Image 1 (cartoon, rainbow, N blue to C red):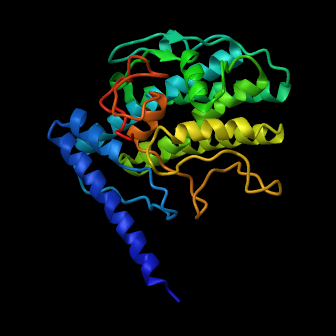
Image 2: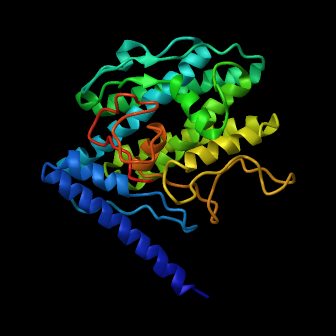
Length: 320
């Protein structure tokens, strides 16, 4: 028998997503990308209701408006990729992205912190090198799609920000480059948030080629996050990830969008943090920036981005 109530719920969710995108595109069309796009993207996503959110069919809007909106979305994603790529590149190779991968519009910044990890486990080292390669590829893909519209890498802190989040989590003097274990914690901190950020972005992209690209990056980021969580679980490092998870969850609002890697008991793991339907959580742009700015209030800089991010989607949500 068809469950009419469930059908109604799905249709309502689809209508909401379509309305959100129409509003965003209309704001961009009026030249309001900086203000309107930020307000909408910061408000969308972040659902933990346990129901699937269907991907809507893009509404009939002018190509120029759609592309303008998508440029804002892709530039937001590029800021996150700069952060992730620099962390993994420094940890795996002892150097950051080349200058050719970091130029663009907006205020260019440099990287604070970062050093090569002396890995004890060759498996962890191999995984670090693989992820570093993929993250640089994500940066280069987004920059190629954006062309002259690509934003420059902003100032990035991959040292003090980790230590500050460690303090919030009750992990004193946290240094993600000190050991294999600490490197995995640092990767866990970044990757889980980036997966949920892409999940929140995916329904908002309207350019067909970029829909496929964002979905592909979401898939790659999910593989990475699952690998990191599996390595932590396999090594028995289950307590500290819960502390970091709780610290992240304390920054992005009242909804529970974060989970550690320990299951309900020792007979089951929690490698995939999902809702009751087995679906990955979403974070809005504002919620993700709450975590990266280390600030539950509305802000435009802090934490991993001490001078803020480049582009029109650049503020955290009022999640306090």
